[in-house]
Each structure stands twice: as structure tokens, then as C-alpha cells.
Length: 480
Figure 1 (cartoon, rainbow, N blue to C red):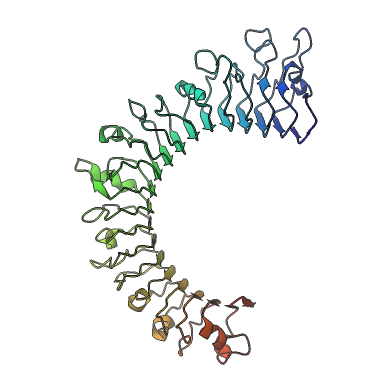
Figure 2: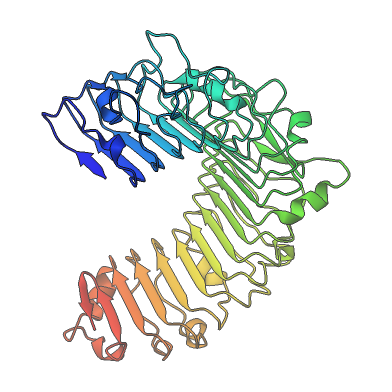
């Protein structure tokens, strides 16, 4: 049942009497100030169990709602709690709601509170683990105020916690967490004194700049950690240790202003610990200078992204040893001059993107034999030195200001090429005289004035040379 946008309704109907109701959503009731005993639908003798089947209850956008009154026998009554089977409770943007949540929710598994800044303000707080029955709670999502709800972290079954825009300095102990997400908590400065639980599999930190990252001895306890994402947080962190998490598969580092490098810990098992990592992303770390001296032992790394690291001068050595790598993205690295000089690119690479690496001069493509997708933007000299494999399916080139011609011999052998995109190459005069590969089914040319005029639909001097291609885009015109 959905009750919404009843702007003049100030009293809810007795929906608690509906014996089969499983989901109830109440939205944007602008005049509602109090939810009282009438909501539950009990008669005077309390002979009716309210909401006997309700599993999900959601309140959204209730600007004037101030008070949530229990039925009168919510605990200790003959017929038990008001919501005996409720599994999910969502309170979304109820800015004036004060007082207490229902204290008896024996089956509650997921609680989401967002934009309820004054909840528990002005009355005795009952939402603590000593006075409420939330023993089944598994997921807690708190966004905006409501820090008193953090006392629920001690619930034994709690496995997922998300905190956003909460004014808190230190996290309380969370004994059995598996997933922890911390978003936009500018005052948060420390993790629990005992560290995080060994059960943790996912840790996400966003916009928590004052937060001190865990020390080495506490990191070593995270033996189940599978995902680690840090974005615009932990400003004091200068180096991030690698090889400390034995099960880590995904590492994402974004906007860490003071991070300078990664360090490979010198402990037994450190190299073996890196064998599970399959995705590494480093984005917008302006002080990042290097990854690690020497090669990084990532035998199963399949996805590698480095973007917006203006001081980065080198990539890991011996990239060709990363035989599991399938995707390599390198964007906006103005100080990167070369890489893959000691053996070439990874042999099983399928997708390769280079954007705005102005100083990059030459690229050794020895061993490149499985590439399907190649994109080169703003890196003029790369295309000239790269030997393209016959497996290539899509080639995209753009922002190559000095490119004057395409090597027909270099493209002619691309027997698998189906898509060719050429954007913003103002100096490019013509396509190869030898013609394009017969396998080509899609040609797109944009922001290339000379090319657009030369191959214009029907009227261009060389239109006949490309007219057989099934799908052509010239400027804004699509010809099929």
C-alpha cells in the first residue's frame, strides 16, 4: 500500500487492521504532525494484533511529522509488539521527527534513517541496545544527524553499516561487521581503539579527511578484506602498504591529496597476499610519484587504471609480466614519458586507453597479441610507434593535433577492425590511399574539418572511397 501526496490529511487510517499487508509506504503527507494509536487499528480492549504481516515500512518526505506514538501495548502486552514481523524500516527526510523509534522490533533486519536530524532530541532516548529489541538487526544506514543510533552497533548480528553526514569523532566498537561505508564525516578522526573486526570484507571511506588510517598492526588483522576504497580521505596518509591483506581483490584510491607512493611490506607472505588482487585504480592523487620501485607482483591483476596523477613519472616495471591484465587505462599523466620499455605491454591485454599523456613518446608493443579495443587521445606520438595487432576490433583516435596522415599499411592488416572513430584531428588531411580494412562496418569522423569536407556524403571528392561502409558518421550526419 502507498499513501502519498495527501496534502490536507492530518490523521492516518487504521491500516494496522489489514492482516495481509506486507509493505506500507507513506510519502509527502504535508499536514501530518502525529502518528497515533489510530494508525494501529486496535479496538479498546486491544483484541487485534496490528500489522501482523507487515515486513517493510517506509516514511518519506514528511516535513511536519513530529511524533510517533506507540499503540499503548508495544511491549509486554498480551498481543506483543506493534510490528511483530517488520524486517525493514526506512525514515527518509522527516526533519522534525523527535522522540523514539519503536522499541520492540524483534525481526528488524535493516534500518535506514536519512535526514532526521532531531530524532531523539528533546525526550529520553530509548534507542539503545539496553532498552530496545533489535536483536535481528543486520544492516544500519544512518545519513544526516542521528548519531545516537550508533549505539545500535553493538547489536550482535549487525554486518553492514553505512554512516553519512554524521557528526562523530570516533567510531564505537563494531564487533561483527562485514561491510563498512563512511561518507562525508568531516569530524571523524579515528577508528575504534580496538581496530576493525576481522570479519570485515569491504571498507569504503569518502570525504573523511581527518580520519587517521589504521596503523600497520590493525591493518594486519583484516584478513577477510576483499574491497578497499578510499576517496578524498585520510589526508595524513603518505604511503599505502601493499601485501598486507591476504584476500584483497579490489583497491580504489581516489583524491588522496598527500599520497606519494605505495609500499610493498617486507614480511613473509606479502607477495602471496597480492595474488588475489584483480582491480587497481589510482585516480586524482596529485603528489603520487611512483608505485613501488621494481615490479608489482600482481599475477591475477585484470584491471589497472591510473588517472589524473600529475606528478607520476613512471608505471610499475615489467608490465609484460602481468599476463592476466585485460584492461589498462592511463589518463592525464603529463609527466609520464615512457613505460613498458623492459619487455613491452601485457600480452593478453584486450582494452587499452591512453589520454592526454603529452610527453609519452614511444611505446613498445612487443607481445601485444589479444587487443580488441584501443583509444588514443591527446598523445600524438603513440600511434606512430604502436604496432597494431590483427585482433583489433575498435580503434578510436582523438585530439591528435600534429597527426597529418594515417599509415595505410598499419591499418590494412587489421582484418578484424569493425569500428574506426576519428575526432578532433585538425591536421589530418585524408584517410589511407590504400583504403580501409574491408571488415570495417562503422566509420565516425567529427571535428576534423578537412576530412569532413573531403568525405562528405555524396558531394565530397573521396566519398566513393568510403560509401560502401554500412554505417558512416560525418559531423552530425549519420549515413546508413
